[in-house]
Image (cartoon, rainbow, N blue to C red):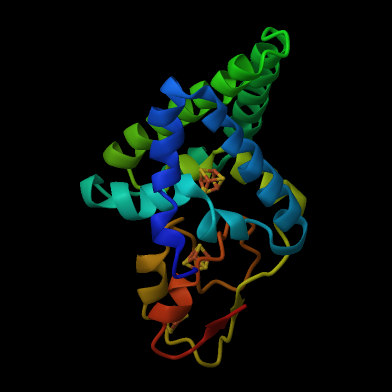
Length: 202
Ligand code: SF4
Ligand code: SF4
Ligand code: SF4
Protein backbone atom coordinates (compact mmCIF):
# COMPACT_ATOMS: atom_id res chain seq x y z
CA UNK A 1 0.00 0.00 0.00
CA UNK A 2 1.12 3.55 -0.65
CA UNK A 3 1.93 5.98 2.17
CA UNK A 4 -0.87 8.25 0.98
CA UNK A 5 -3.52 5.44 0.78
CA UNK A 6 -5.11 6.10 4.22
CA UNK A 7 -5.94 9.69 3.22
CA UNK A 8 -7.89 8.93 0.04
CA UNK A 9 -11.02 8.28 2.15
CA UNK A 10 -11.62 12.03 2.25
CA UNK A 11 -12.65 11.88 -1.42
CA UNK A 12 -15.66 9.73 -0.46
CA UNK A 13 -16.87 12.47 1.90
CA UNK A 14 -16.14 15.23 -0.61
CA UNK A 15 -18.23 13.53 -3.32
CA UNK A 16 -21.01 12.19 -1.05
CA UNK A 17 -21.56 15.38 0.94
CA UNK A 18 -20.08 18.14 -1.22
CA UNK A 19 -21.70 16.63 -4.32
CA UNK A 20 -25.19 17.33 -2.95
CA UNK A 21 -24.42 21.05 -3.19
CA UNK A 22 -22.05 20.93 -6.18
CA UNK A 23 -23.03 17.95 -8.38
CA UNK A 24 -20.04 18.35 -10.72
CA UNK A 25 -17.95 16.73 -7.96
CA UNK A 26 -19.61 13.49 -9.09
CA UNK A 27 -17.35 13.51 -12.14
CA UNK A 28 -14.48 12.53 -9.84
CA UNK A 29 -15.96 9.04 -10.15
CA UNK A 30 -15.01 9.04 -13.82
CA UNK A 31 -11.39 9.51 -12.76
CA UNK A 32 -11.79 6.50 -10.46
CA UNK A 33 -13.33 4.39 -13.26
CA UNK A 34 -10.61 5.40 -15.73
CA UNK A 35 -7.78 4.68 -13.27
CA UNK A 36 -8.98 1.20 -12.36
CA UNK A 37 -9.65 0.30 -16.00
CA UNK A 38 -6.10 1.28 -16.94
CA UNK A 39 -4.46 -0.56 -14.02
CA UNK A 40 -6.57 -3.76 -13.86
CA UNK A 41 -5.24 -5.51 -17.02
CA UNK A 42 -1.72 -5.34 -15.57
CA UNK A 43 -2.17 -5.55 -11.80
CA UNK A 44 -5.66 -6.96 -11.18
CA UNK A 45 -7.26 -5.36 -8.11
CA UNK A 46 -4.20 -3.30 -7.16
CA UNK A 47 -6.32 -0.15 -7.41
CA UNK A 48 -8.59 -1.49 -4.61
CA UNK A 49 -5.75 -1.82 -2.13
CA UNK A 50 -3.84 1.32 -2.99
CA UNK A 51 -5.84 4.05 -4.70
CA UNK A 52 -9.57 3.51 -4.20
CA UNK A 53 -11.09 6.25 -2.00
CA UNK A 54 -13.77 3.92 -0.66
CA UNK A 55 -11.27 1.19 0.02
CA UNK A 56 -9.28 3.72 2.04
CA UNK A 57 -12.46 4.92 3.75
CA UNK A 58 -13.54 1.46 4.93
CA UNK A 59 -10.02 0.32 5.88
CA UNK A 60 -8.88 3.37 7.81
CA UNK A 61 -11.94 5.44 8.73
CA UNK A 62 -14.63 2.83 9.27
CA UNK A 63 -12.60 -0.08 10.66
CA UNK A 64 -12.60 1.17 14.31
CA UNK A 65 -16.42 0.88 14.32
CA UNK A 66 -16.58 -2.54 12.65
CA UNK A 67 -17.44 -5.80 14.39
CA UNK A 68 -14.78 -7.48 12.19
CA UNK A 69 -16.64 -10.74 11.71
CA UNK A 70 -16.05 -13.31 8.99
CA UNK A 71 -17.26 -12.18 5.56
CA UNK A 72 -19.86 -14.75 4.31
CA UNK A 73 -18.57 -16.88 1.42
CA UNK A 74 -21.75 -16.01 -0.52
CA UNK A 75 -20.52 -12.39 -0.77
CA UNK A 76 -17.71 -13.59 -3.08
CA UNK A 77 -19.98 -15.77 -5.19
CA UNK A 78 -20.41 -14.78 -8.83
CA UNK A 79 -24.10 -15.63 -8.42
CA UNK A 80 -24.33 -12.49 -6.29
CA UNK A 81 -21.61 -10.39 -7.87
CA UNK A 82 -22.70 -10.53 -11.50
CA UNK A 83 -26.36 -9.55 -10.83
CA UNK A 84 -25.20 -6.68 -8.59
CA UNK A 85 -22.80 -5.54 -11.30
CA UNK A 86 -25.58 -5.58 -13.92
CA UNK A 87 -28.09 -3.92 -11.58
CA UNK A 88 -25.86 -1.00 -10.60
CA UNK A 89 -24.49 -0.45 -14.11
CA UNK A 90 -28.04 -0.62 -15.52
CA UNK A 91 -29.22 1.86 -12.89
CA UNK A 92 -26.40 4.26 -13.76
CA UNK A 93 -26.90 4.08 -17.53
CA UNK A 94 -30.71 4.44 -17.20
CA UNK A 95 -30.32 7.51 -14.99
CA UNK A 96 -27.74 9.10 -17.31
CA UNK A 97 -29.97 8.58 -20.35
CA UNK A 98 -32.71 10.47 -18.52
CA UNK A 99 -30.55 13.53 -17.78
CA UNK A 100 -30.80 14.82 -21.39
CA UNK A 101 -27.07 15.56 -21.14
CA UNK A 102 -27.47 18.34 -18.55
CA UNK A 103 -24.05 18.40 -16.87
CA UNK A 104 -25.24 18.94 -13.29
CA UNK A 105 -27.84 16.19 -13.63
CA UNK A 106 -25.22 13.73 -14.93
CA UNK A 107 -22.94 14.73 -12.05
CA UNK A 108 -25.80 14.09 -9.63
CA UNK A 109 -26.22 10.55 -11.03
CA UNK A 110 -22.62 9.81 -9.98
CA UNK A 111 -23.13 11.52 -6.61
CA UNK A 112 -26.26 9.41 -6.00
CA UNK A 113 -24.37 6.26 -6.96
CA UNK A 114 -21.56 7.19 -4.58
CA UNK A 115 -23.99 7.87 -1.70
CA UNK A 116 -25.90 4.63 -2.36
CA UNK A 117 -22.84 2.37 -2.55
CA UNK A 118 -21.09 4.11 0.34
CA UNK A 119 -24.19 3.62 2.51
CA UNK A 120 -24.18 -0.12 1.73
CA UNK A 121 -20.41 -0.25 2.38
CA UNK A 122 -20.86 1.47 5.76
CA UNK A 123 -23.76 -0.80 6.76
CA UNK A 124 -21.95 -4.06 5.95
CA UNK A 125 -18.66 -2.58 7.11
CA UNK A 126 -20.03 -1.98 10.59
CA UNK A 127 -22.13 -5.12 11.06
CA UNK A 128 -19.72 -7.56 9.35
CA UNK A 129 -16.21 -6.41 8.33
CA UNK A 130 -14.65 -3.29 6.77
CA UNK A 131 -14.09 -4.88 3.37
CA UNK A 132 -17.42 -6.77 3.22
CA UNK A 133 -18.65 -4.44 0.45
CA UNK A 134 -15.40 -4.92 -1.47
CA UNK A 135 -16.17 -8.65 -1.71
CA UNK A 136 -19.00 -7.95 -4.17
CA UNK A 137 -18.45 -4.34 -5.31
CA UNK A 138 -19.09 -4.11 -9.08
CA UNK A 139 -15.81 -2.29 -9.67
CA UNK A 140 -13.90 -4.97 -7.78
CA UNK A 141 -15.64 -7.65 -9.85
CA UNK A 142 -14.75 -5.79 -13.03
CA UNK A 143 -11.07 -5.56 -12.06
CA UNK A 144 -11.06 -9.25 -11.19
CA UNK A 145 -12.48 -10.07 -14.63
CA UNK A 146 -9.94 -7.83 -16.36
CA UNK A 147 -6.80 -8.97 -14.55
CA UNK A 148 -7.51 -11.35 -11.68
CA UNK A 149 -4.62 -13.60 -12.63
CA UNK A 150 -2.08 -10.77 -12.92
CA UNK A 151 0.52 -9.76 -10.32
CA UNK A 152 -0.13 -12.74 -8.07
CA UNK A 153 1.11 -13.06 -4.52
CA UNK A 154 3.80 -15.75 -4.32
CA UNK A 155 4.21 -18.03 -1.33
CA UNK A 156 7.54 -19.68 -0.57
CA UNK A 157 6.36 -22.95 0.97
CA UNK A 158 9.87 -23.75 2.23
CA UNK A 159 9.92 -20.62 4.38
CA UNK A 160 6.27 -20.63 5.57
CA UNK A 161 5.73 -21.97 9.09
CA UNK A 162 1.94 -21.72 8.86
CA UNK A 163 1.73 -19.23 11.74
CA UNK A 164 -1.41 -17.58 10.33
CA UNK A 165 -0.22 -14.00 10.85
CA UNK A 166 -0.77 -13.13 7.19
CA UNK A 167 -4.39 -14.27 7.27
CA UNK A 168 -5.09 -12.21 10.39
CA UNK A 169 -4.10 -8.95 8.67
CA UNK A 170 -5.66 -9.63 5.26
CA UNK A 171 -8.51 -7.12 4.84
CA UNK A 172 -10.16 -9.34 2.22
CA UNK A 173 -9.94 -12.36 4.56
CA UNK A 174 -8.23 -14.50 1.92
CA UNK A 175 -6.39 -17.82 2.47
CA UNK A 176 -3.11 -15.93 2.09
CA UNK A 177 -0.49 -18.66 2.49
CA UNK A 178 -2.25 -21.23 0.34
CA UNK A 179 -0.44 -21.64 -2.96
CA UNK A 180 -3.19 -20.90 -5.41
CA UNK A 181 -4.45 -17.94 -7.38
CA UNK A 182 -6.14 -15.18 -5.41
CA UNK A 183 -8.02 -13.09 -7.99
CA UNK A 184 -9.61 -10.99 -5.23
CA UNK A 185 -6.28 -10.04 -3.67
CA UNK A 186 -6.15 -6.24 -3.59
CA UNK A 187 -2.32 -6.17 -3.48
CA UNK A 188 -2.22 -4.12 -0.28
CA UNK A 189 0.95 -5.89 0.89
CA UNK A 190 -0.10 -6.14 4.54
CA UNK A 191 0.49 -9.89 4.59
CA UNK A 192 4.04 -9.36 3.31
CA UNK A 193 4.76 -6.89 6.12
CA UNK A 194 3.25 -9.23 8.74
CA UNK A 195 5.11 -12.37 7.69
CA UNK A 196 7.97 -13.12 10.11
CA UNK A 197 9.66 -15.47 7.62
CA UNK A 198 9.64 -13.29 4.51
CA UNK A 199 7.75 -16.07 2.75
CA UNK A 200 5.49 -13.78 0.71
CA UNK A 201 6.24 -11.53 -2.25
CA UNK A 202 4.78 -10.22 -5.49
S1 SF4 B 1 -13.93 -3.23 -4.32
FE1 SF4 B 1 -14.90 -1.33 -5.02
S2 SF4 B 1 -15.05 -0.02 -3.21
FE2 SF4 B 1 -13.68 -1.70 -2.68
S3 SF4 B 1 -11.67 -0.86 -3.07
FE3 SF4 B 1 -12.28 -1.91 -4.96
S4 SF4 B 1 -13.30 -0.41 -6.29
FE4 SF4 B 1 -13.10 0.44 -4.20
S1 SF4 C 1 -3.42 -11.52 0.30
FE1 SF4 C 1 -2.01 -9.95 1.15
S2 SF4 C 1 -1.82 -8.42 -0.45
FE2 SF4 C 1 -3.63 -9.66 -0.92
S3 SF4 C 1 -5.34 -8.59 0.02
FE3 SF4 C 1 -4.64 -10.07 1.52
S4 SF4 C 1 -3.16 -8.94 2.79
FE4 SF4 C 1 -3.48 -7.74 0.93
S1 SF4 D 1 2.78 -15.07 7.96
FE1 SF4 D 1 4.35 -15.99 6.64
S2 SF4 D 1 5.04 -17.77 7.78
FE2 SF4 D 1 3.10 -17.14 8.72
S3 SF4 D 1 1.54 -18.37 7.63
FE3 SF4 D 1 1.76 -16.44 6.53
S4 SF4 D 1 3.23 -16.87 4.90
FE4 SF4 D 1 3.44 -18.49 6.42
